[in-house]
Length: 378
Image 1: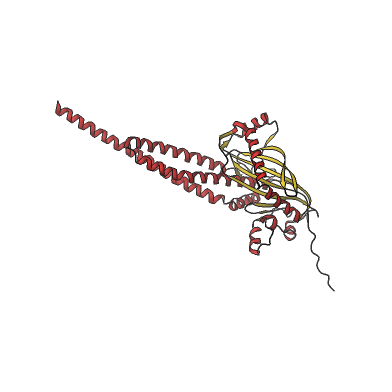
Image 2: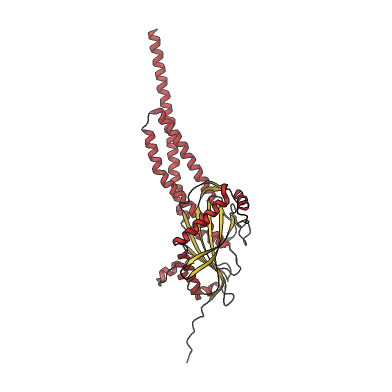
């Protein structure tokens, strides 16, 4: 009589961590050199410039390497008890600060690892953790001081959650084996109920491997990474993609608010008398031109935050993350609104020039009439 096939033993995550990070738009730009100097002087702890650890600079590199700051140990309030974590921050030159909370995991069965990640996700979203994010952000703001160029309240935020396994209990495991033995759906979806087959396929669709023993699975707000060599390049790439989404969302909302204001200002300028109206058209055109120049400069910085040339694997992950996060869609919306403002600027400039020309013609006619009247009187 044939023996029944025994189910495969549940894998334990022998070594890994959970990373929750939140990104804030805090300024028009950040002077990273000043930030490093000020942080060292006021906080008296080290900082470093971010770089991709295993990828050659000529293959893929940061446009302007961000500054990494250590913020020390913190505690996350979980229902089963406080959980220690390590806090770090990264400063990007286009005005974004990323705060990361890292929870170390060791010898945890896979279902418990997924539950721990979901518990961390819930913990960082509740009120006590919100206060923790705010406190960490305020510490960074105070520590870098004048490095923030035109600082502003953070009105737009992005967050992301990553589960990382560096080793499993049975030693080296291939990516195909992991897919067969691990139920990634609870970790990637955060759902406790079983999902439909279609939903499961969608969750696992963005799956990537370069070697036989590594694996990256991406979703909109979470990722799972198996990396036995401890490389963090994929995490860095995902953070840059999230930072780009944050900036594009900020400028999309900024232009959404600017367009109705622009229409009101144009209408108000048209109701004025000719000469002041022409001056107001010119002033408004200059204001719109400045706005377009600033937004264009910053969006170009954001677009060039990561330079990809030769590393095909990381380039695929980066492109997939941008697509998943809808960065091209939001960027296209920003470009459309910038185009509307450019067209309005051109129309205002032409109208101001036309108003001045018309006024000069009236003045010339009046002067001619005055000359004729004076000649007749004489």
